[in-house]
Image (cartoon, rainbow, N blue to C red; front, top):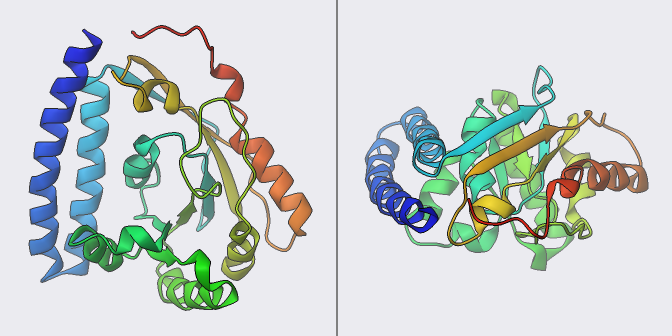
Amino acid sequence: MAWLRTIVFAGIFYAGSLLFVLAASAAGAFSHTGLMHVAEGWSQFHRWCVTRLLGITIRIEGERPEGQAFYVLRHESFFEAIDLPTFLPRYPVPFAKIELIRIPLWGELAARYGVVPVDRSRGAAALRDMKRAADIVKPTGRDFALFPEGTRVDVGTSPRMQSGLYGIYRLLNLPMVPVAVDSGRLYHKMPKRRGTITYRIGEAIPPGLDRIEVESRVRDAINALNANYRADDQPG
């Protein structure tokens, strides 16, 4: 049954995604707001496929703070990347590696949506570019989001934070909210499995703290669900 659910999910989600890409291309030609609505709709469609077709329950522990914030999330699978506009309803602005922006069509749409590209090869110059991009979006009140490990990480591990995390925290000058996510054990596996994916929202970290404290608090908070992993889990 797990394989059947996975195959049905893949067929419906990817076919639907193609329609959303076409809709985003059309909407983006006329309206930035329309493009953002389509992006949010795609995320909500994905959430529907995850819950209805895969049988996964989404649980949120803790409360999102009021007002604009900078969210940093653990990244175990594509689930949280696609789910981001559903989890954060104010059209969140992700920081993403520049290679994603270079993907034909998708990258152009992502740039129009407001994704801030991260080019690690350019060092301090990259931070200046990110600041210019973030300064354009920040007055709109949209939240920012980043996966601080820089790439997808294995279930149960606690990798170090990328060095750019603190620089982005300083340039945004917003409360930073760490979020643990345990999607990898269900969504990243093949076949995908039934169960519960949990978001655990940590305590907001105020602007202005030193690097050691910030990175320590973020690492502890985003790895808070590691204990949920059981090596002997069997497909559901």
